Length: 314
Image (cartoon, rainbow, N blue to C red; front, side, top):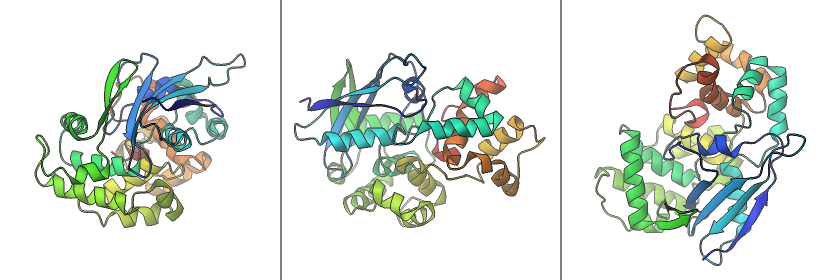
């Protein structure tokens, strides 16, 4: 069943190609054929949808092309909710012109924006899916667990045909609770996944609720989940909800790149990094994701793969 379609008009620069090839968490980057294929649990975590996302060519004045989405899923799917979630995942709910102004205030950020035009942080589909990925991938090879997640989704979630490719959505929490074991997923992970599922059903992984709490309170609360410590709570909160102004002062890769980009001679201290990041407000999250993703291009070195693991958290 295909319930409909909608269009999102970006405000400010946006590149769907940058989002589709970004690669982080359970979503691999890769080749770009003009379509970004999304399959996910809709907020509320009872329905699953698939979405084909395409972008029009840029306008005559260089304005970002409209983002056009075709939705596949249950006939009763709320297109407004789907639209809101897609906008959140692609960071399209914000005015990208403010980020352009960050680049005007800080020439280094401006140069990074020039080599990665229109890049905005792509997010996990939801805090629920981010938390499930954290449990699956902890101390395990990412590629191996991506494959396990895909097999789990195909067996117990829902598979959509999106622009000629089969893409599986993670099982909804109720479906996940019915899975006692699964090949490729360590036995100790299933109880933790069930804890994530129950938290989602209880509303503790609702994106709007976490945003209302603020990053620090939200991170602290999520650490009550088995298997979720400070590191992973940051991942869930920052890259599962869309906080735009969280600065990861203890992330080694971001600090190393900042030291090189700003010719400091060494990674900055926490205090130095905070001072350096003042011009990035109110989009410090975006700036650090841009640094991790685009600095290798500017510095002429290979990319690091998961450039977007939470605002600089790997």
